[in-house]
Image 1 (cartoon, chains in turn purple, yellow):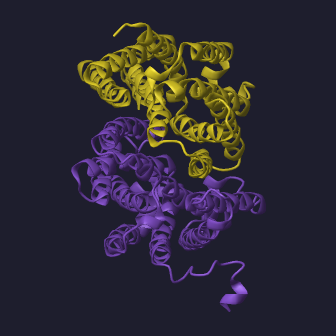
Image 2 (cartoon, rainbow over the protein chains, first blue to last red; image 1 turned 120 degrees about the vertical axis):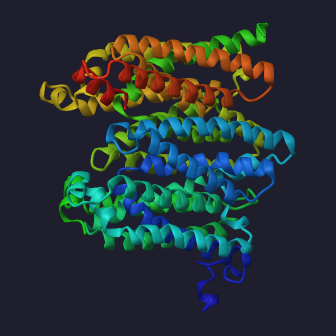
Image 3 (spheres, helix red, strand yellow; image 1 turned 60 degrees about the vertical axis):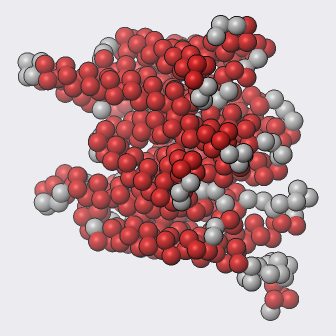
Length: 299
Length: 280
């Protein structure tokens, strides 16, 4: 069997510990991102979802300076940022991008400061690249339980608020009429988003964080109009893309004579982008007006 | 602080600030903050690719930011704009990580591309920066009326025959040009702050379009000038000062408009509603 597959899968793929950790963590993160991301796309908060990944780098680099685990830096920074976005006005559609942008701009300034202190204080020049791009292969396996807990919390918030979330995502007015506390639901959702993004940004990097949050969910919402089904499809697309990406990155070690292999993020992002493009062409007719059709038939 | 070397820094940063103030005004007006973040960030990948094949960084920046603008406009036609933008930025950054894995570039150089190296701008680079800046502002002036119309009242503009899709593409291309000239000076991450914060703050102070645009340019200039001076005196990175001054000016603007709303309590409800929706 292994002999038959060896042209596809380089020997030692499944017995390699970093690869095992990458597959497990990548899979967990992809599932959580798919579930949370479905609502991110429906609520039109892709910018916030992406920004939190970048904002978290300020927390991550501060954690580097202080010498604590970057995950806690990410989570603390992102929860504060989500609070600031909510306060400035992420609720109003028109102010949404601006609220996100102001918080992002301020956080990037802080990131510049902390990364500067990182690179000059200790001579770890890799800090900038590591914090910004992450690497799925350098995860210590001791992180797996912490990651699992945060994942359960993030996915749990979304599942508990499932129905009010769908309602507020589709029509805030309708939700108010039904007695849903729209603002509270929005804040809880931002907390779930902040947790999910911290988790993915710190484990697999800011690029993959956004890619797994938005790409699979946007594709799934093209394929089906039902929110629950879309979340499942998004999680599946995310997991498959992540695992294929890890496999390709592992294989690519021997492809190009640059002595290091190609980055996982490149493969995963490319796969997700291609799947999205195909879904655009394949399901063109079904979702000509994505907003209205999702609104009318979701649930 | 005003030596020959620093003079180039002052000049290039001032050009960038003027362009960022004008273009940023429309970014805030149109709510295209995400695109303004995605294009510089993604163009960074172009600079990495340019260094890989040995051409000038500004060529890579231009190619990637223009391709990015066209892809966002293309994908955004059929899907939500924010989704298209998110996918474009991750795709460009994915390519960037591939290029970076192939180069032997040192991390400090990557840092300076991301966070800016205003002191690293040579006087020979001033010419392309100035030319691109003039083109960007010229394009804005040329399409000022239809752009303003389609930004403020997209539906009415469309009914009056303004081609909003074409407007969108043209505007994203202007953002791409701004990106190309600004990234080497203030960095891929902080041009964003310079595009958003001064314009957003300016709109809290006045709702007149030309006034707000002028104020936005003034605030942007004040931001970069004080950021350079503070960075020079404290030896801390300029990006930190650009980011935090931006946040402070925005907070001041918000505070001012809240104070004004309180002061004129109820006499002009319609004016306030407009102000609110415009500033929000």
